[in-house]
Every structure is written in C-alpha cells, then in structure tokens.
Image (cartoon, rainbow, N blue to C red; front, side, top):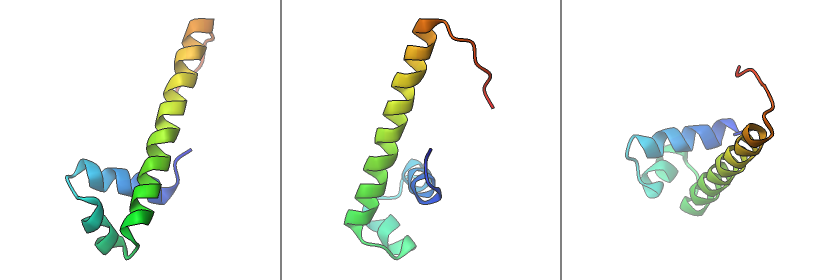
Length: 64
C-alpha cells in the first residue's frame, strides 16, 4: 500500500514537477523525494507482479 506522501509525490511527478521542485514544495530534501518515489514505484511493480500471478492462477477477485 502506498503511503500518503508516496501518492502525493507520484501525483506531483505526473504533473511534471521535478524532484527538486517537489522537495521545495514539501519542505523535504531531494534525496527524501527520490527515496519516496523509488519506494512507491517498487511497490507498484510488486503489486503488478502479484496481480499477474493471481491472473495466471485463475483466481477470481473483486476490485475495490
């Protein structure tokens, strides 16, 4: 699950903000922005792999 800050950073990146701009806006360091972004993208990749595995197994699930 993504944290609130990870979601916020991904939303700002989608809007075209650079890491340095996000750092300034959120009053955190650029390396912190980079770490939050990396962690969020890792979680997204992991979730995608899990969903592919679930699909391969033919497991039915409901999206919330």
